[in-house]
Structure formats: structure tokens, C-alpha cells
Image 1: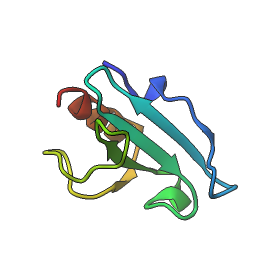
Image 2: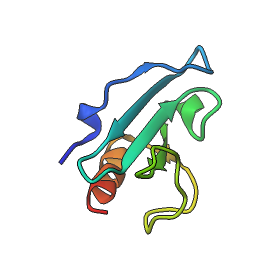
Image 3: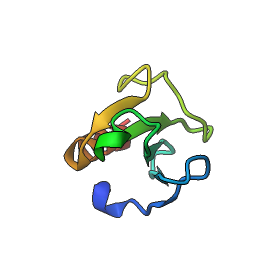
Image 4: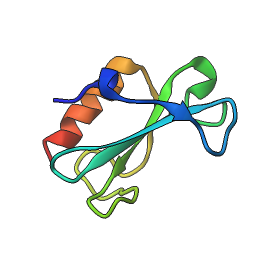
Length: 87
């Protein structure tokens, strides 16, 4: 199972102060993880995660969530990544 430590962050394309990572899992789903002053919890160094569907776009149609999830610490991100990998 992939965890937070497997994420490779790059500078955020829209927010110069932020970072972002996108990972696609073997099941075709993925996670988009960001942290910037403009994301939920980013000002506090926390992360925001969106589920990526098999079409490569953010999806709100999984059993995990119907929105982006914010205010996440590294352990929270890992837990959600594991749930996504089990879809």
C-alpha cells in the first residue's frame, strides 16, 4: 500500500507558496494532495485531498467522500490513500 511517504511533491502550479502531489494507484483511482495558504488547513501546514477517478479527473462519486477533504495531517492522508487503493 502506498502512504504519504510515497508522495512526490512539486511546487503548486497556481499558488506559489504551496505544494502539490498527484498519485494514481493500480486500481485506476488516485489522490490529489495539496497544501497552500488557499487550501483547507494549508495555512496551518495541513493538507487537502481530492479523490481522482479512473478518468483522471476529481470525482465526488465514491464511498470515501462527496467533496474534497481538508485539515488533514500526514496520517490522515495515508488513511485516505489506503481507502482509495481499496476501491
